[in-house]
Length: 281
Length: 281
Image 1: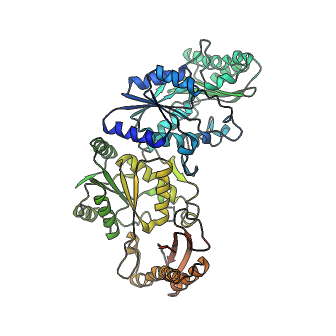
Image 2 (image 1 turned 135 degrees about the vertical axis):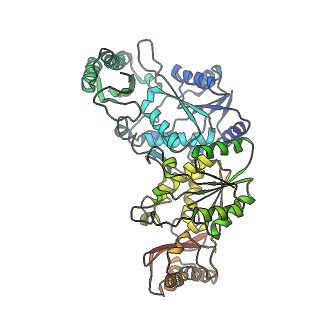
Image 3 (image 1 turned 60 degrees about the vertical axis):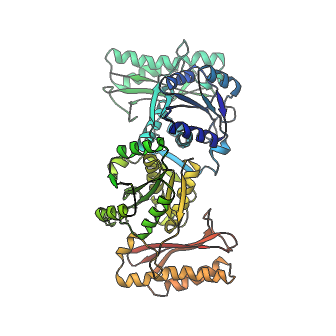
């Protein structure tokens, strides 16, 4: 595995692969890799000839009060894990090279970013869409892989690709979970052991909604109420939002009669955690 | 020359040229071609192996009170002119195919669009940057050609390409003028013969500033005053703006001691006309 930090070298190499007809698979990450990331790499390997993993903690997607400075980093470990999983190039650009002339050029979506995490993380999604558009132009992938853990991000990026006509296929990979169900996240290292225990209530709540739907309850209001009760039962989880939306448009639905998704963001003391599950009637 | 309106066919063809190592030259236009456009094609021919001309009257770059509906169109004539000049593909997409899922995905620049035409044409530049980003992804050019007539647009698009890391070279072509100096524009057909006559005062004014600079006057205030007097002397030209700015950053300059540009937009009865000239000390 080769590690590149120069954007010019990355782009030149990618363009030469394009010309050679080699199918490029791309997994963009912020590093501190866990098994969830590694499964994205596996999907990239299966769907391309040459896999690029980027590791870039993108400053523009953090709001001023967020955890940019303390976001966990361990490049040496990430490189080992990526190489073992068969990544061909680990791309580790600097912010100076990604934003050479400041950050005035922006890619944004006005609608899909309006709800759910949007209001709680001002500027987050435009940071994500901007950096991913830049990375797409540098890595020139044929296929890019994203996790369903960040479901709103997945929908936003899929829509960006479609609307801006990037010739890129987006593949979505189901959330990888710890054995007790907690969605894997680089941010889970922030949790104390008591918090780690209580955090399992999040997915337990979402599963209550899935189970009730399977038994024929389709009212979003009722499903949300069931999920909420389970989530807050430990006493420390506070909901930012808990919503059921159309799986594609992310518009709120009253009845789960089409492919839908239940999504949540919670506060657990100083930590912010997100999770979501499909609701298929 | 082939004419394509399908975005998928255009992109598939462009990707096949990329793979074959054929250098793609691109001239994006809104059609109703004049000699200025044709000179952009000449530059594209000299700098690439395969030239795509796009003709698309982009609705998102017109403000609600502007001339979208009456913008002049003559596709049959454009096709003849383009073919005679050696264009390989004339790309004529529909708005439905360029904006398949609405217009929520936007590319914008926050700073270079703030002054000059920006405040007078709300939404104009984000319409331009968005559609050009889409066209770049469809046509996949190695080099794209723009006229200096729309100087702010040229700077905005150059900065977009640099910031978003599009692997595209931007070439700028000096404004082509009628024999009496009027900058060629598809919108000149709107002018009555009296207006057409008075419109020559615009470039005459800008040239007064150039001449005074050549004689050693470097004060922007004085140069602007000289230009203004000549421009408004016919009685019907009203200035939207007349400014001297740094040729790259478009920031206003007090003294012309670095490569600069004098730019103007005027109203002549119902018409809006723009022009600009270099000021090189």
